[in-house]
Image 1 (cartoon, protein in one colour):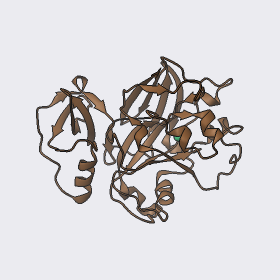
Image 2: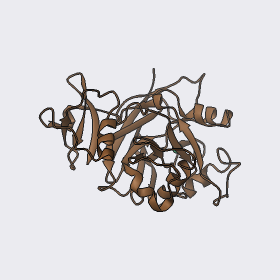
Image 3: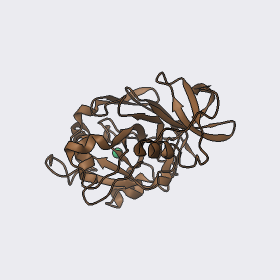
Image 4: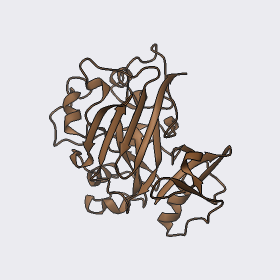
Length: 290
Ligand code: MG
């Protein structure tokens, strides 16, 4: 099942997208401000989804929004979760955490207000705020059934599905404040979508993730290469903290970010970043000064 949120005729809708990704069926929902959260809540409660509220539409005719356009709390994000990415930033972002594979995962938050749609423009903040804007292609998991102190063995029962995010980062701000949240949470710095694919249709533990900048492939990896796998991330993030339906955990980015290049290549006005995950779809965002 592919759960999506979109604008059509100037009105927000939520509904289902066909497996081929070409047709969208709106479902009856009074409050679309929380995206597909009502569908997640219905699935978790074992209740039927709402009835269709209109005809099927070609996806090409609608404007997709983030499936969860305003998550109800911050996204939990994992840093340094692919070895090649750990290596490429070993002298910068990870200079204090390199070569500690047995350590705990690095976890930080992105504020929910930075989420934008899968094809929205990302706003460059201006070079007086940051001149080191970077992309991070990531698989994000969406929690279905909530839980507290979830064990690795039970973790996959709590995964409702998956979506794509670009964990856009202002590297200079990230590095300056030691805690990463500010440099990760600028307005528009979390493109998300194109929808949520449920875990019966996609195994996020074994899929391919790729990222392009202006058509040039920069990131290409398998989620099998995660240092801390999805069950471990859920176990870690639920230690002492209850996870709720609709919570999002971004699993980290592979090697190939702009900061890892020699010399680093930052995003600038007009650049287009595309991220594709097999079995899920693609998001594509242009970066522009406001
Ligand atoms: Mg990241």
